[in-house]
Length: 266
Image 1: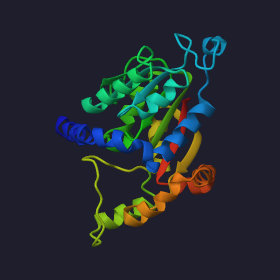
Image 2: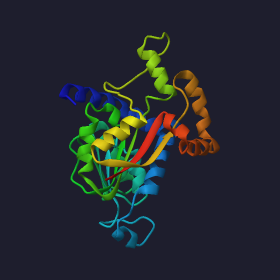
Image 3: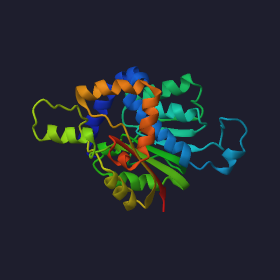
Image 4: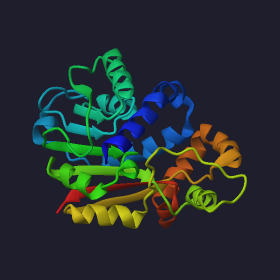
């Protein structure tokens, strides 16, 4: 990513950081896709032997699974992983978001195990990491394969790389296509670089870095715009959210707005 474009993306998320923190607890869009990420993580991360031997439900110290959260934003995922006993680091290009992330980690008493720093997806911290999460990042990169190659080098043996990103082949993806082709009345607010991917795109990028999929799921099926906002009100009900998670495991998940794939190294 060139310096000018990187600055544009950073400014975009710096401006959004306060608002994201304010609405995340009631934003079913965020809650829904993060639930999918966490289910993938809980199922496929292989704890190290030392972590398994550590007493207590939330192991801490050097035996805990080590995570790298690329694009950690304001720390929502890091906070969830703190409760699962992870240690490690989150990186984000937005200083405002990193400040929020470190504040919330301190508030829950996890700052000794998890921290957030300003950094680049192309130059990750030194591993190895049992889990690398790439949430809402790949679509903002001009060279996704370079990023995945760098992350692959920091992945522990049997480690898990989880990628989630907006799906170009979805209802919102169709709406975006209509907007880009000049259909009146359809507007989208997108980041300076926002290249939605497909299931096939992700698998191709990963294969170029020596990664193979172990989990394929998609979630969040409502369209965008006013209609989507109204339908989204249903997500406050637990049965609706559970039904969507079940649907994410079916072939229909391939066309969910957010796709979530888990990868291991070959």
